[in-house]
Image (cartoon, rainbow, N blue to C red; front, top):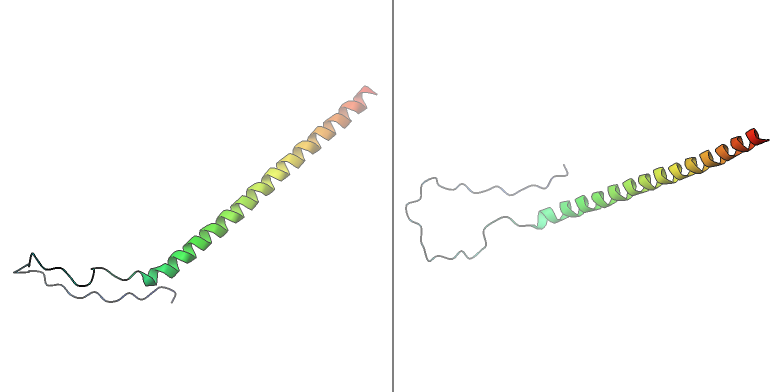
Length: 85
């Protein structure tokens, strides 16, 4: 449903008898690029969104690790202070 419909390729004969050497095609060979431009934009947008989400998750993990380390230092100082009294 969301895939672009590609034009059918013409049937090429399997044996050619004469290939002109000085003939230049009027139209460039190949398919048009226009149907694929929309797909490329969607892929780029999804990669950017995934990158933002992963960066946010990494930042959340880093902040959590720092807060746990600070809590451990505070608890350690409280417990060492109670043993000295």
